[in-house]
Amino acid sequence: MRAKLKNVVLGTACVLCTAALVTATTLLVVNHNANSTGKGGLETSVRPDLLISGDAALSVESSFVPFEEGEIITDDAEDHVLSYFSYRIKPGDMVSVLAQEFDLTQDTLISVNNIKSSRLIHPGEYLRIPSMPGILYTVKKDGETPTTVAEKFKVDAAKCALANNISAETELTKGRTIFVPDARMDATTLAEINGDLFLLPIRAKFYYSSWYGWRNSPFDAGRRSFHSGIDMACPAWTKIYPAMAGTVTYVGHGDPTYGNYVVVEHHSGYKTLYGHMVQTNTSAGKTVTTDSVIGYVGSTGLSTGNHLHFTVYKNGKTVNPIGLLSTK
Image 1 (cartoon, helix red, strand yellow):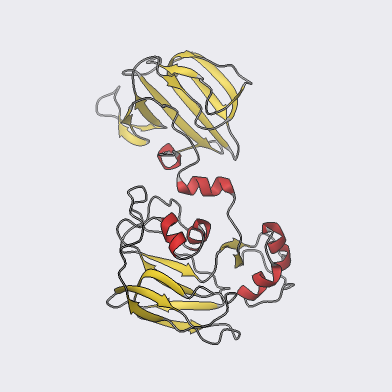
Image 2: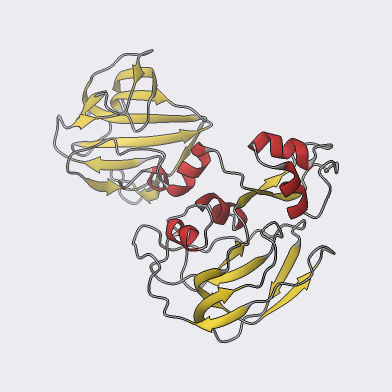
């Protein structure tokens, strides 16, 4: 039983019990020094969307009044009873550290709060904290049951059923959301959200000379154009590495836009493009790792100076690489 969850900022909450099996959960706020939570600068600001499951055993409706920092002490409610409380994000909070503080997984906080990027959580906003680790699951087809869902995630079916106040063989309808105790997100999705999916393709000193998105065209004054990747400026002949292991699908030379460039295909619908090389160093069909040198920085094609143009495609569409690049 998690008897103490430290460093929580609480407001007065109106709690509505929606399941007959939930008798009562007492929340006591005790003043406590709350300086031990993690401090960092990687996970900064955007408001996480709060996703509330209609199948939760305990529904919490909160109207917040003046807050105080403290710790929660619960009574002897069973660990398998699903309940939630709200936590107010403080400057310096990180998803990974908060998960440790609450004896949960990063997957749990990310899933329950529908966080799209764990680097972007906003001080002053609120996270829903469940009483057990697990993730939300949206039923894919009619007829799934807690038992079949539990089998997918290799977790306990009885615990899954109890957390949602249903039987293990209850037939679920497509689109329904349930909480799956102890389940984890797939590794690729978690890496995407944590911004650890890709390594930097330039391992030497560089600076970002242009970002993803709309910008003033460097080639036509007064015109706006969409930049499909990011530019990493550094000296000519700097080594270029794949951001993720994969297979080289195309090596181009003399392209009017990208000059000499390489395209690498990865898992999960991802492709990456590396443009403006002074020289390529690979061939189509070759399997590459993140340690393979696939080319060298140059200024070929439509370019204003030595740099790497780096584009990421997800299922054929460009996405902003910045949120996917590891800072480690």
